[in-house]
Image 1 (cartoon, rainbow, N blue to C red):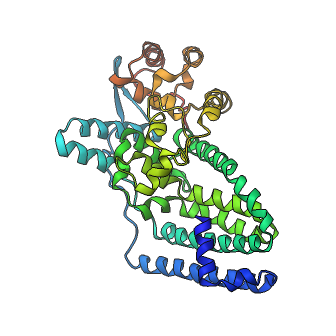
Image 2: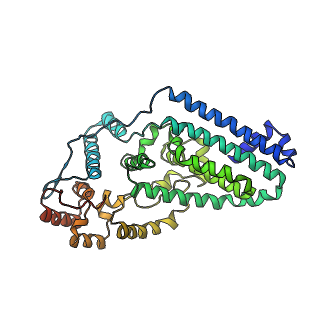
Image 3: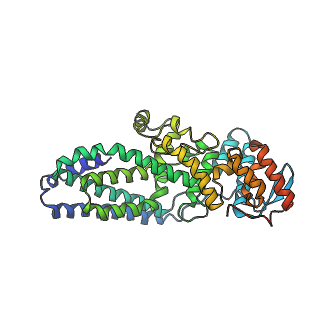
Length: 389
């Protein structure tokens, strides 16, 4: 993409490349071009603001959903996050009880992505403006030092794999540890987890809405790169821009991997494994959904999968919290952790009571833990420690 932008710069103002010996003139042009696009971005934000506030997901929950039916009787839960999980499970159960179009409609309503705020959309356009400025600045530097082109290009595959590893780590964090109530990444964490329940829900999300999800999160990174760009070499700045563009479009790369008929242009890159394809990403959606988190092209998955397995246990020991995939799929909880729960039953999170009570998650080990918990605390969880909070 950087090459395409640089090409556009050459067509619009070819004299800049010839006058690369005039850095002040070139930098003035670059900042002017960037400022123009920033104005366009904020104009879009201002106009979109007149349409009113962004819509939110409809409330599909029952405010009285505070009891769980277990094989050992009804249990009351008090944790806010456990109650939210119970409501989710009730909503899914009700949707699955329907048939045909009504079933599909109910599942999509449950998993529908939140409409992005005007701020997120506006900042996404501003991010594009800064990307164009950075691309132009790279073109100027390469024109001045053509020998930098080869190493800059040679480093891109390394940056690609590194970007996939970073996307994997962030995906792992959202899936397993991020709080849905956090103002920065809470909505993303909720969307990712509901997406696991309804993997084909992304077909109803448009391109702009999809990439705008991380507009606010990416803006500081674009600003920092633009501010630091005068001291960057062409090689380093190229890698920074490639990484920023990959991160900005990670949600769309992910969406295209779920579409039955992805964009033809994207499909070519998927076939070459340059971008994530459905074959690679389907590995992530296999229960217990605890591996293959990379969303750029999945090239880092082999390296990261074993790391996450060990990290789950380390963080559980350190924080006393279970990763979300243990909660969602109790059969994946290691035997060593189950044995610890039997002797330290107060550490059992209320969320696990919710999911362990589902027929699809039936597990003799967890059922034994649940029985011990009820024997100790009775059918009310008011006295139990909520280990997830």
